[in-house]
Length: 249
Image (cartoon, rainbow, N blue to C red; front, side):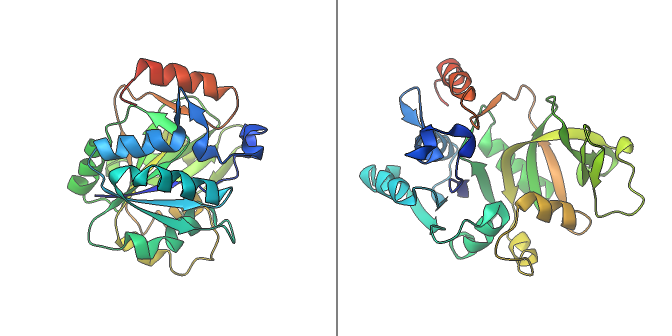
């Protein structure tokens, strides 16, 4: 099975740590974020992994070399010349991800107890084009899903500002289920074709919201989901507490 790890980000919210280190190599309880995500993927059966790099990309490449790619087939999608955002990053990595089977995408700064293999298999059995790991946590920004259509994505809202995005006309966000994205998704190969008209650099969520009426994008909910987004300095202690409570993570 194939997976891609987003490891190219600047990690600006983790400064000053990321002034000298990429976010992927930030240590959490003795292991880097990257190693923890790679290990989780390997334990779930993913044996071909693509990792995109930009900020201190050479350090990530050297880290993988020093660890012999953790015994896996790991390839690097090099964005050191230009950071392409999440959608552009996936599209640039297309030659490394092509095939008949879906691939899983995992943010390097997400630690969770999600059953990655079950999520992947559920995506296949539902015949979805994209499956988004979501939860009912409190936030200001929500994805909106139609429960009557297998929890299909129909839009997005910021409840603090009232902003709404949807490809559907006369869209009423109050009619749909609000769920928060959790940084992990499974993508079927046909979606790569739909990305071709887009610019070199674009956020994947903008693509999902623009194409939701044409691409079957669905919610994946796991009961009892626990996760930590290691995006800010205060979250490092939360992440260490999480891995100490979930040694397999």
